[in-house]
Image (cartoon, rainbow over all chains, first blue to last red; front, side, top):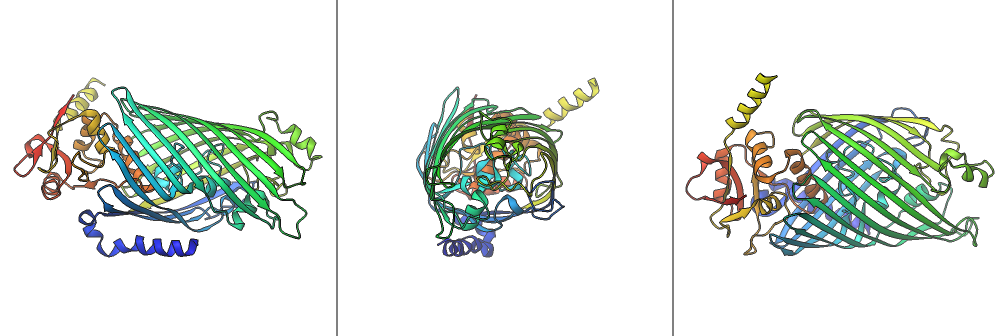
Length: 395
Length: 135
C-alpha cells in the first residue's frame, strides 16, 4: 500500500518542479529541505552500536499543497530520514491529506483533515522532522521519544481543528482519530530485535486544547491521547500474544518575548501490558517526564538554548531499583530513567542556510530502544553524551 | 549608552509606518488588529465572499516587515516566521508570497484578486485600495 501511495505522491510533488514559476497563479505551492549532520552518542546505542561519530543524521523533505477549490486543499510530503538506531532509516510518506475549511470567518475557523496527517497536538510534533522548525537537533526524549517517532508523528484517519478568536485571546481545539501502520522494523525496534511476530495498532485517539493570550506571548495547552496495540507472536517464538495500551496526559506552556522564549511540556504516560512475556503477564506502569527549555535570540541570526529533560519509566520506581531487583540484576537500575542537560545554538548563514550544534549530558538509558526488552550489552554506562552538528538548507 | 539608545530610537522612526493594502476585489474596508493577525498568521484563509486570501509580505529581514509585525500584528517577526513554517511544513497552509521590494508588492497586489499586503504610506497608488486598521 505504502509504495503505491509514495509513488503517487512523488508524481504529485514532482509535478510543480516543471512550472514552479507559475505556482502563485496555479494554486500550487511547494517547499523542501535538505539537512545533513554528524552525531556521536558515546557509550550508548542511541545512534549506533559503536558510539563513534556517524553521518546518520540525514533529513530530506519535499512537500506540496494544491488548491482544489477555495475551501479545499490537497497536501502531501515525503521525507527521507536516517537517524541510525533512533528510528528505521528510509523514505516515508509523511503526510497526504485533504484539508477542508468547513468554516472560515474572522472569529471562527474550523478545518477537517482526512488522510495521513501530522500530529498537531504537541508544541513541536507537527514539524519535528523539519530541522528549521524545531528548537534542537535532538528533541527532549521525555516527550519526543525517537523510538516512538513513527507512531507519534502522524495518523491515518480523520482530524479536526477549531479556532476561536476573542478580545482576550485565541482558543484552538484539536481532535484526531485513526491508526498507524507499524512495520516489522518498527515493531522490533520497540519490542526487541529478537522478536519475530507482528505488531498492529488498533487505534490512536488524541485531543488537545490550547489557549493563547491576546498579545500572542503566552500559550497553555492540555493534551490527552490513547493508543492500543496488539502483538501476534510468530509460531516459533517463546513469547506470547500481547495487548498494549498507552495513555498519555500532557500539559504544555510557552512564553515568547522579543529576545527569549520559554517552553515546557510535562507528561504522564500509563502503559498497560497484557501478555508478551507470559500469557497471564499483566503490568501497569505510570511513567512521567517533561522538559524545560529556554531559548535566547542573541540576534536575528544567532540563537542559543538550554534544556533540562527528565523521564522515569515508573513513577513509583524513580531510581530503577525495583526494575533491577525484579529482573534479578539482568537490567541495571539506570534503565528505569533518563535525564539530560542540553546546551546548543544555531546560526542562520542566510535565509536558506542554518548551522546548528549542541551537546547533551545524559544520565540513564530509560529512553533507548528497544523499550520492552532493553539492550543491556550495548548500553553499559549510566552516564553518556550526545554531540551533534547539522547543516540545513531550505527551498 | 545614551547615544546608542538615541540611534536605536532614530532608526526605528526612520522606517515609515506600514499601510495595509489590498486588491480592489477584497470585500472589506477595515479590519481589527486581531483580524489582521489572523490573516497574516494564515488562520483566516477566506474573505467573507468565499474568495481565497492571498497574503503578500516583504522579505522578513526588511525594516518595514519588522515594524509591520510589531506594530500592526503585535507579533515578533520570529513568531510569525515560526507560524508560517509550521503551516507550510505540516501541510495546513502555504507560506505567503514574498515581494522583493515595494514596487513588486504593489504589482502583486494589483494583479492578484484577494491579495492583501502592506507598503510604506507613500506607495499607495491606483488599482489598490487601503484597508483601515482599527486599534
